[in-house]
Image (tube, rainbow, N blue to C red):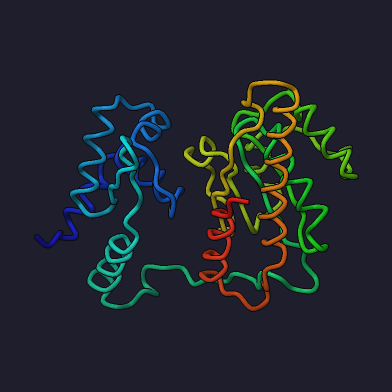
Length: 274
């Protein structure tokens, strides 16, 4: 049965269903477990299931199974179809009536350094390491920052020691709130990366200039239990994965990539496993 445009718009009309849809769009192209969705949005499991079924019936999200877990992801072709119907039918094939013209600058130019923000929950380990690595490995093209949605008192001591051993300058590293970068006088970001699932599931500010964003999730080394050697190994592995991703990112031919191609590249980097 063909899904009508009003069915899709009706599915998005409920505030909580819209929140759920936005969460899956933030996590695209990844899929998210139903339990994780319910936890992120503070929903009862049966309520989350009802909302998920409504969005799935409208064709806006897709369902898959991983073991015993149901996974959900945004159905991007259907979302694009909704936009096409709105612009083609409602705007009479005149997208200039509905969309602001893009005045995005060239991503890399000789006279500008690009800003990148790494987000996690506590801003004590993964995002701190990413900030230090990109500032060190970014070939002078980037100024990296990091922040947390619920920042810790300061960077993890193991992280600081690891970075010092690898000759990184740690004097300016501190745990910071996301709100610091939402202020009117904050640096304008060109890239925003989430490095933990919890931060990726949360609604973030509407960043000025529509920066490229991607989810580069990896396990939290702070949560690893065991011997000191096992904990040290977890931090080393997190550092190694982040460095590999950031090295690949910094090596991209920014001057030749349009925004869509660049978005696909950073999404692919986020799926690097080692």
